Image (cartoon, rainbow, N blue to C red; front, side, top):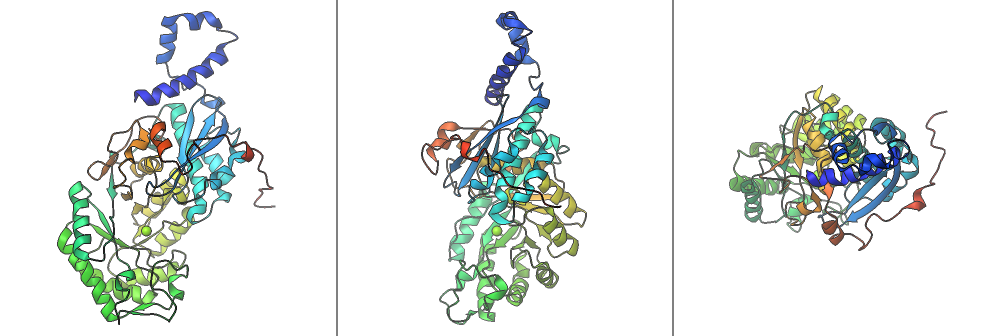
Length: 454
Ligand SMILES: [Mg+2]
């Protein structure tokens, strides 16, 4: 707590000093007793005059993903932290710098509406979302409240996390790894269950010659011509059976990364998996094809889930309204940031659809997720991809460590996101050594005629 407030106060006192220079005179500040008193008052006294002065980047690598951290600076010494979606270019945030300079960061929604036209699905949403997180961090620091409180308060004090683990084609080994996650305290597990398991096994996958059954293809699922045979489906079901043998049937076990197979194969595979009571089947076909997802959801009695690539609430609302999915799965660093993701949860709740949260970033974005999850009633579970990254916790200070403790994250009570960067550790894991929040004047004047209607 102290650390967070110290740096915060230093900056704020600097502001108070200059603001008071003309009238209060040096005498007041020279009086140690009075200065002590000033330390104890709410120094967040001028949020109405807070202005954005800078936006800078420090990109962390192998966390395990690439994580571009952004810092928004202000005229009052306080700053906000945000994170561009894992694997995205920091340029997605930097080219918005000129649009936010001079704005009051406490007007989070106003700024979001100004810049949201520059985001898109997948990683392209990352810049808008990273800035939105940093604005909430700033607003919280300025008013002295945690982000979840500004969203209407919390429904829970601890956030349930789910994790997967390193893949193995041997279901016994994979099952043991998942069991170890369970024993670490995770109360929700996820496994990869892809058609790559069938690679090289004759008679399991029908595919046109020259079409790879691997995961890498950029061809959408329905257009690959890849279909599973009964033998292939049986092998994948047997694989899940053996994993279930290891982890048991009491813990929710989700499945992802099926590969690019056609809708009929999705349905036949889904039906074969019903008896293993999976918690969800993820991203079976691209989210844009809501009618196809509905076909799968109607045919298979396992929850169907998608959403990690969807930008803004509208795509989620359509999926929930049609009941094309049983669970939505936004990635807050793509979906529109903290407030838009709460709106997604709330809107889907109206249709009886819960919200799980996809996440694969640093502790900065993690905490943005935690505040949103705390404040959204239909939240189910939050992903964590960094269980095996030993220094992941050390990237930040100010929160309980380990951040994910026995499968849960405690919701922080400090102003804003509730974290400070650990400069020393962040500097050890930069994508480009030395590039730690360097000046970005080249982005000060980026301009376009941004009007969306005439
Ligand atoms: Mg996924």
